[in-house]
Image 1 (cartoon, rainbow, N blue to C red):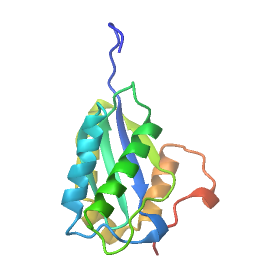
Image 2 (image 1 turned 45 degrees about the vertical axis):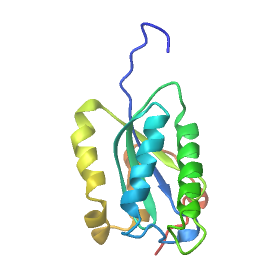
Image 3 (image 1 turned 135 degrees about the vertical axis):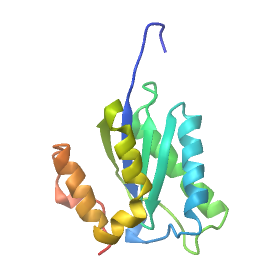
Image 4 (image 1 turned 90 degrees about the vertical axis):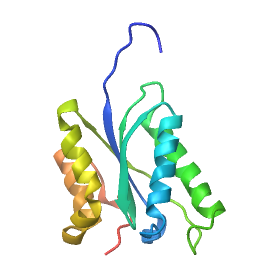
Length: 154
């Protein structure tokens, strides 16, 4: 980055397991989320928290502006899929659904976003992923076409 460039960018990325499969079991989540955090850091971002449930992941990062969000999510998905499959962490072939959501926050929101992501398991006892995701899109005023949303588990 050029001298005199200063940024403070906080992004929450959300992506889902392919074919609506709940393959991120409780047993493998800590290892997978730690691995995803490592990918994020290796790309020059700062991992704040990575967490999720069986069918999707939330990654909250301090963004390195030299690397696009799309490239970041692509690298996370590619590397973590290889990691899960090469280490046989799932009984099925693992891959992520196409697409992702990315939402920006100010520094004052870090604590609330962290707690929200930290409590995903409790949160999803009350609210389905589809409802959560559509709420994000509406809250951030993101235009979307339902035909291109994730395939959600019911």
